[in-house]
Length: 329
Length: 251
Image (cartoon, rainbow over the protein chains, first blue to last red):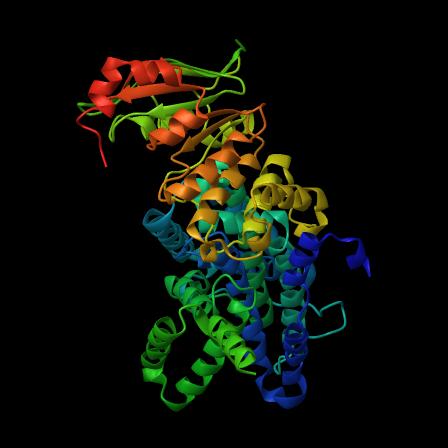
């Protein structure tokens, strides 16, 4: 192993970022729906997409401390980009997804100059405003977006020219899961890099960052653009796997939902958004099956319970629990 | 005497009618240890904020070596070698001491922009950070989160973060604030052992420490520099005795 050539402090840092068995188990478990819940692959695909969206929010909120109430802007922008390209006759999924990523990235980069100048409450208002602005623009440009009826006529070609997007969601889930996993690997690299450390520095103490010579605005612009790209990919996936795009992809509700999901799972932890998405989406599916109109009652209860008893989300709670068990053992 | 490492010319600052800095002329020669003293509210921290760019002066100029840095942002001044610490701990609570100092080294080296290779791969940065922590006797607790460190260790980490930027001029805002008397001498021995390439200006209230570690002392009162001189001169100065060491001595 190379670890013998590493110094003691390096080994210590290395140990913090090593792949844990539980992580490998997690990713293996994401394959279970194929065998155990073949009827739920459409839901599984939605969960994977939401998890990717939450992961992108985690990069800016959980790591860099940038609070956003308008993250759906990039999700929806990617969604409409992918949808429109397919509608206009180019239904190839991978290039369509790349276009969604690029479009959301450009929008993210453009808005990042405003984002990098503000913090806290002002930031919440600005991201909220940007999100509402884009949602309204999409609503009024119904000649382009289909308005409240949604974007119709999206036809996807076969993935790799071989796999049809079917009603059962087999292709959809495989595709979404693979993209999620690749994006996760990227996020993991980013978080464990010097740049990732700088982001945590901004979250922990932006004033001290300036006092050690860090260009905070440049760091923030960069991570915000990367997060926008990732959100755009998530949006693009939704458009491609459902073959439609609705205004809901840009809505405030979607921005709020993803925030809830991330806080539920645990912000500032790579798996926070993923675990949050699974819990939230499965709970919504189950609760709304029993009693649709009370769905938000239960999610509200769940949210208050988590914030009260698990301030670091479900994952924070699990970490504490395993520490407790280990110290007892 | 050496060329000045840091100088200010005619620095003014007021908040409304409150004058916090008036015509501040200051020269800090290379490698010297200067103390900045004065009663509470004299404008000592304000002066550090002005020099490091956290406040903009109404008038006047700040020079680092030959260069006019008045227009530079705080982080740009750090890149030029003008670095400060804080009176109230301004650290990264959830980062370990090693991570925090490595971060400061990475920012200096320009590694902090790179997001592809993992942190431990930057062995030189990690080693340098660790060496700084060893030299400040923080090695044994360097893997613990900052918020779990003892208060005195956090004060040392304040200095460690500043050193990681390789400063030419170091401005220490009450480095021993809140540290028990016995330990503060130890902390200042760390400061006086710093490389002689670094010019140091420190704010301190404990006169024993000031007279022991400072080569020269600047006395500020009401936003102005009252007098500057060697410890011996300051101790003998009647004006200083009146306003500072005399009856109105603060707690």
